[in-house]
Image (tube, rainbow, N blue to C red; front, side, top):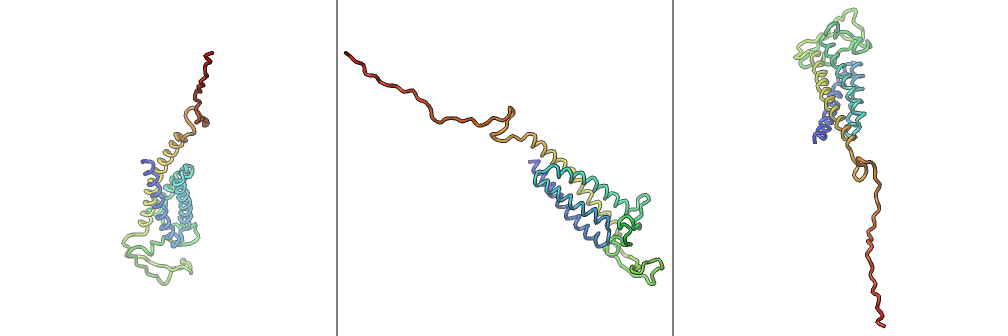
Length: 213
């Protein structure tokens, strides 16, 4: 019963991970955040494989899913440190999340709750011609905290998925070790079916007449 509940819970966690990462992928595409887009894409593939392994009783897929979750947690911790500017990290650096391809920031920077975007004219001389120079004000929640909330949710789901993945792999392994085919293998090895006859031999009695002469 516990094993069934563990599998069902892991399937639910995988489903939640897919929903959350797809939502995150959409906003990363809108913000041209190429590094997160690539990481999200790999995560989607691994979660699908983990879900397949859970449904089809494939411990190898579940183990790979669990190993990836460790890397996924590490990536999201880095994203949190990046947006909170821990250490020498700075959220104004283009190279890390956009591979220095563009000057875009998080989509939430301009579209966060309550944010008001104002174009600044004339633009500074250093601003590229194909980009507009803006100021953002009035946000109820700064964009970096929204990104931190997304990464924190991914970490929570990843930790839960890792725990249940280990549990399901343990249950599948134990079940495979103790599995006994009905009418097949036993502790003494395989014994083939024995033929039995349904015809039973009965003794036959003959009455011999006696000659009185």
